[in-house]
Structure formats: C-alpha cells, structure tokens
Length: 258
Length: 328
Image (tube, rainbow over all chains, first blue to last red; front, side, top):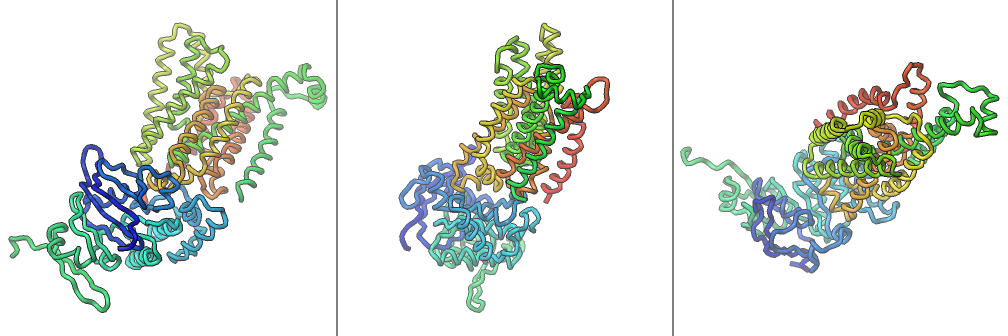
C-alpha cells in the first residue's frame, strides 16, 4: 500500500441505542479503489457517513493524514473528502451546472465554472449544463450529482451506492469515472450491491456483515465461495470471460431441494 | 433575467406603487390640494398625505418586504416550497407573543410587542427547523406547521378567554386580522429597523441555503459553517416575521407567493431569491393595500382578509404542483 491517507481504528457506531458498526479498523492508501459490499443493514452507509464526519463514533477514531476527522474544520474536511449520498434529491430546480458548482464553494467564480463544466463533460452530461435538475431523468440527475463530487477535487471520494437506479451504461460510466479518479491518485470508496460490478471496479473489496468487516482484500480473495454463502446467502463462482473475471451468482438451494 | 435586473424592475414597480398609494384613497384630492399638501404638510390635505397615506403605504411596503424575505428564508431553510410564516404557524406564534404582552398591559412599553412577537416567531421557527432536521418528508413538515399554528391560535384564544378586559381583547382581535390601517411613522420605523439587520443576515446565510438544497447531510460535507449559517437564516426569518406581525398582525400568503414570483428569474437559487423576494413581497402588499382602500365597501377590507382570499387558492395551486414533484 502507498502512503496511508485514511486510518480507522476500532470504530463503533450507534444509531439511537442500537450499535450498527462494531470495532472496524481499516487503512486506506492514496489511489485505492475500494468497493464496500454487504447485505442491507451491514453498516456500509454508516461507515461512509462516519468517515465524512456525519456520524460520531461511539468508540474508536478516524484519522485523515493523522488529523482526527472530528476535530477537522468543515473546510479542511471538505478539501479532504467529498460525499455522494444515496438520496439523489435536489430541493430546487437549479441548473445542473450550479448544482455541480456546489462541489467547491471556495474557489473564484471563473474557476468554479470551469471545473463544473469539465466535470459535467467527464460524466458525458455537458448538454445538461443549463437544464433544471428537477426536469432531468433519474439517470441524468445521478450523473450531475456524480459530477459535483468529481468537481470537488477532494482527496477521498466517498460514494454511497453510486449506481443504484442507473441503467447498465450509467452504472459502468459512473464506476469508470470513479475508477479513473483513483488511477489519478484520489482514493475512492464506493458501497455497492452488485458484486460483479464491485469485482470489476475495485482493486480491493471490503465485505461487511452485521456491522463488522468479515473480509478485506482483492476481489477474488474477499469474495470467496464461503463468504458469498455465509454473508449473502447465495452460491457463486468465478467465470473467466475474455479479459475480466465475472462473478456468477445464484440463489442458494434450500436443503429440501437437494 | 439576472437577479440584479429583476431587483431593479421590482424596485421601479415599488416606487410606482408608492406614488399610487399616495394618490389613492377614500378622500379624492384635487390637483390644487396635492400642491397644498406638498407646500404645507400641516394643512388638511398635507395631513392626509403625510400622516395617513404615506406611513400607511410605506408600512404595507416594509411589512410585505419582511414577509417576502421571511418566506424565502423559510423555504430555503426547510427546502419546502410551501413554507411561509403564515402557513407554518410562525405568524401564529409571533401573535401569541404579541398578545401576551398586550393582555399583560405592557402594550404601551416601546418595543415590547415587537420584541415579544419576534421571540414568538423565533420559537416557532426553531421548532420547525428542529422538526425538519429529523423528519425528511416535506408533507410531514406542513402537518407539523398546521399543528403549531393551531396550538398557538388556541393559546391566543385562551388568553382572550381569560382576559378580564374586553377592550384589550377587541384591540388584539382587530390587530390579529391583519391591517396597516392607521399605522404611523413609528410603525414604519420599527419594521424598517428590523428589516435592515434581517436582510444582512439573510444575505450572509445565502450560501448555506444553497448548500442545503442538496439535503442536510450532503450540505454538511461541503465545507461551509452550516450550523452557523442556518442559525443566521433562522434569526433573520424570525426577526422579519415577528416585526411584520407586530406592525400589521397576521397577513398570510405574501411570504408564500413572493418567492414563487421571482424564483424562475434567479434560476431557483434559494440564496439569490432572498432580496428579490423581499421586493416582490413589498410590491404585493403595497398593491393589495391600495386595492383594499379603493374597493368601495362600507367597512374597509382588512388587508389580512384580502391576502388570504387571494393567497389561499394560490397556496392550493403551489401545493398541487409540489405534491406532483414529491411523488417522483
């Protein structure tokens, strides 16, 4: 691993009285491309929100380049990380380019616009720049919101289910663009439900189950037959298709069928 | 249209409305009388112009501006196009504050009613913001506002109920109907004094409102001091709504309609909508007041009654459109 950028030690998180994440420790280096996977309720979103500083740890700590996230000033935190939430609503019908420009409120107006335009271009949505976001389709709006995160230039990009609700082309585009940013040196952490996509996108897969990390490594090492069975309740095997490995899944047979 | 151009346009319309407000009224003045009024403010026509019509028209203008600003701030803060002090109960909590002071017999203490109304508005607005932070559904916020409004209304009614003085009760009732009739320069000054700092705070909070359009959590990650900006917007909305209620009672729907009139012109930016919305609110109420004055009725129409008659159907229309947007 290259220089560690993000370090999580013994992180526990609670929502109300319920502990949803137990004792998670991770180190994330620069330029890593991480897929965070796990069934619903495994704690993926909670971990992402805690890294962003939106959820206070009930135990443990999160550091970015040795600075505790909870003590970072909002501006320093925004420079360190950008957050793409699962919920893609925008309250007002602002032009797409203005929504993208919200990614970096501290630059001068010209620079903001240039970056926003470049980011829209990057997600192949340049033509949407002056359309109101409320008039866009769900897929178009998702691209615009992804562009906002890309325009931020933050060191760590955190995306909570960035491909939920997108068509296949949109899914591949989103992951390709996030992946390209990792290649360029930003660290990307994306929670994903589609394990095949996760395997294709990530160089490291972290599997969470009931609030704990149960596997962490390259896709094939993390998504083993045992993990698939135990965590996701499915059977799966790796297929060698052309250049990229594909994970084929099927529902686990119940004992009565055998 | 740029925000600057729409502000200029609205400003021009406001000047025209003010002049019309000086010319229009129950008593028709001749050209010679206007000349006399300009020459000698102490003359009969001068009194009508400078002690009755001018403060009244200006009062309508500043109260409308305060409501327009407050409505735009609340819509931005709560991310809800149906938010406004009247609908969500902030005017009702402001009235409750004012009514408490009046019934307690402190109505003549300078600034007491105004400050109590602002405090009442502040409590109501804070309750709404706290609710909106926990419950995301926009419809739920409206329901909470209805509850807040009903509760504050009931508490105000209870005060009347228990009040020993029927005169005080009648006075408060008349005030609550919403009017700028018989308002003097002192009232204008009070609202203007509240509106100036509220406008400054509003403009200061504008980047926070824009960030909030992405939702509470995402807004927190954009690097702005969001809690502070939100507090500034909340204070500005409360001061403006409280001052408007203290001066003119409950005038509904201006705060709802004004932002909608100018939103498209500022490309829906919840920060840039603030000042044009204040101007639009001033214009709406100045025109509405003029209409209540020149409408030939035995008893003069109360401004609050008039704006509600026009505003409520508009509210229904905006609610219908918003509900369709929420469904997607």
